[in-house]
Image (cartoon, rainbow over all chains, first blue to last red; front, top):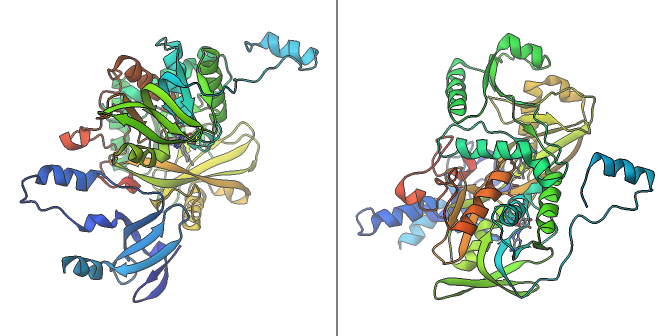
Length: 93
Length: 416
Ligand SMILES: Cc1cc2nc3c(=O)[nH]c(=O)nc-3n(C[C@H](O)[C@H](O)[C@H](O)COP(=O)(O)OP(=O)(O)OC[C@H]3O[C@@H](n4cnc5c(N)ncnc54)[C@H](O)[C@@H]3O)c2cc1C
């Protein structure tokens, strides 16, 4: 698989390590009342969709940036990639 | 029809006209007591033990494709009970004991072959870890032997013992482990279940559940609605996909695992050998092909095929371990979808929906579990209580902090 890195162009997926669902960027609030249950869901439960999946890849053997890659889990087709820092900034606004 | 040596001779002499299909192909009835979703090894074993051991009479297995089209027909057929943790080892040893009697129980040749497994040791630390594992196995009533380098060299002389980076210093062996013919397991359980009245319905995909007031009433399928008092879901790699139709999110990711087989060679590899310093394990099939595999591809996948980097990684592991295979040609490779759970261990449990039961999270190790998984799931479905060897396999172990994490790598499914 080739991942279209927003800054470096097409890169071999072998340069990356895979973490999982991009929702892992949204850590629950540890001070919230339901924090224990929320963390349990956050750590252990996944949507695990068959189809389009947004997921975190780390460019370990490259520029060491985190990417949010959009990929179809039924075909392995990669539909896009963004810098995770941009996605996070967008979510914060 | 009963299989026996006498029957084989008789058929050979009379033109093989007396063989019959191994199971019927019935139309689905409007309702059953128990409906099993998924006609893989686990679903069929569940139906078999439900009928045989627990006396359930109205049972159906619904399979979206044909029997054996899932992981049960794609795995590398290793059976073993060499686990460490108390939540796992008694269960897998129970499975091993069921394997040992499987062919008598199903009257079907599943080619269970206890030719032994050897996990190689490359460092002193690894020897300590394997000694501990071996002791845990002995405590649970399984068998284990720590092999020194010389003894090992006599058994498997063809390994690269003096690899500069990963010298081989010994191994942990389970002599009772081995392999079985995966298709033979499917067919044996299917035939045995069918003979005891279970309806096996192929080409019947479950597309939804009918749930009212927190109770399941049946399943919607590609062949219409089928009523059920209890529904047991056993769909391996499709677990999240199917349970999502009942509104559940699972502690699971689906990942692809690849396997490989070489051209047929003369008998060289006596049992199963696993590389302790890389991702490679190998055995030899009765046809002579070397059957081997390695690690997951590592990203969520439902594609039933993997990519080339893992092919390269597995073959490098093979070359490091036994350079002699470099001349063998690769015949086939394929992939299957693993239900990778968050702690690497399975779930056999009720759900919050009355009458809906779940069996999954088998990761890449569910073939060896097939008999015990079927037995334990049948036990749960029939009696509403977990089997004594499967009490740890609950959904709520994650929120209670009682995960069963053999490798100790945490909630990262691609590392288990
Ligand atoms: C390459 C590879 C190597 C492996 N090697 C080993 C090994 O050496 N040792 C070991 O112990 N394990 C091994 N495994 C793991 C083992 O094969 C699985 O854990 C086990 O087979 C899973 O249980 P099953 O047989 O019930 O799954 P499956 O055979 O996958 O059965 C699930 C069934 O459910 C059906 N299904 C899915 N969705 C629906 C639906 N909506 N409606 C109806 N039916 C549905 C599927 O079609 C499928 O037939 C390996 C797996 C792979 C892929």
